[in-house]
Image (cartoon, rainbow, N blue to C red):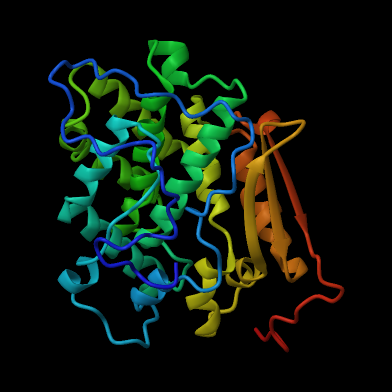
Length: 336
């Protein structure tokens, strides 16, 4: 994701899906039929929708270092547009279209980014983080559902995998908008901000009572992603883990390179790559490449904490390793 693509250009971050034509309208019938399922081929290719790092040009564009001149809000959000492979899920397409057309949503993402990185020196919480978590969440969902994991909206409401994807997308898109208010307890702030928006954003894809089901489960996913969130739906567990998997170097580049050295920036800078693929013994295999043992903090303290209690423990295999013969020295000395 070296540059933000101009409209009309191919986006290398999002795999093409030539089999799914654009649908000009959702049928008037409130029950929108499911589109053809994702192919049954068990070999799901690597998803380039999860950008390789470094660099993340989108993160560079935010000018999140406090030493950089600020960008006026209107300019900062002008080109923001989240993208993800919808794989024929018309409801998901309509929901993403509504989100991308909403200036208020984009403004919340931008304020969250400014608060997190520019004001607090934290890792990236911009729309780029949102897009990465969205793509990771959808990839995890499709791998899990393909291996027989039943979404909670299916088990409890008789809805479909496509509906579960909308729940996951909503949870990913709004899980940290509460950062626009404060870092502490931001998950709770995300809840009431999202509650005011979801009904209208989902209106083009769902009628009642289904719309309330989707919105409620999405908000459960938002509160469930916090450290002791105790999620009890499959979809919430996926959002929780997806958020933790945006751990590669690009997310911490701004605080690290501006000299804000702490265990969070150092450990994230040590993560070279995160690869998510179909597993053999388990549904999903997560491989984490590190340049330095400091990355273990990201894996054990952050990812493992989110994975435990997610309900997905038995379905994910996580492997972290340093492939190089010698570890990369991240800093020459650390002073207090």
